[in-house]
Length: 230
Image (cartoon, rainbow, N blue to C red; front, side):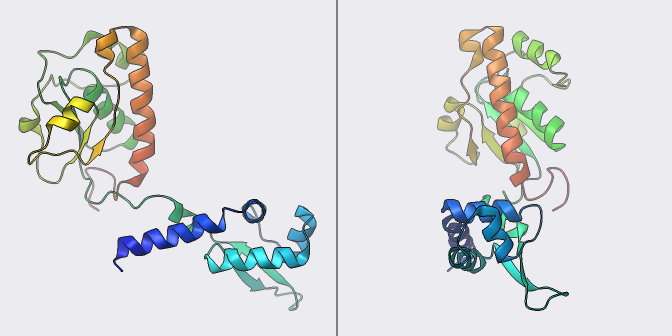
């Protein structure tokens, strides 16, 4: 079994262990501090034999470890292993030293996404289009200004002139994702509706909010801060 498959098995085991409400309650109870099985049973109003069963499942999944009290050596304390909870998250995106966001015209979504990545992930980011427009859309400039987002001085650019080896390419529109099937191929696809089709401030605000949420979700899963050595 390769490393990725092993990781999936471990993550599945953790998910399965947390799939029971009683075990999830035990994990919640141990989040802020350690407790003995008896204390867990009292706190959760659960029979001690049932606590013992659930603790064994959690321990087998690597979520909980047992330790003997330094005071009363007969007493056992349970401690949560926070590192095991990190197994619930997907593996990091390796080699993401720069992110290039691509859409069709490079006039709104890709520009906003790159600026959000630089602002929120503090990483190196660029944007490009498969059919670049002559300029950045005025409403994109306006929404960036409202959110104190720096789009930078660069105008629009073609994907062939921007993307280089080692970039993490993210398509932020369906057309770009479907068109880029050659050497430059997106690793991720964010299906963000084109705000220029509606051409209202509300549509651009919705696109901004969608992109901001996606940046916040994906940035922690990069192997290293973009632009910095891994």
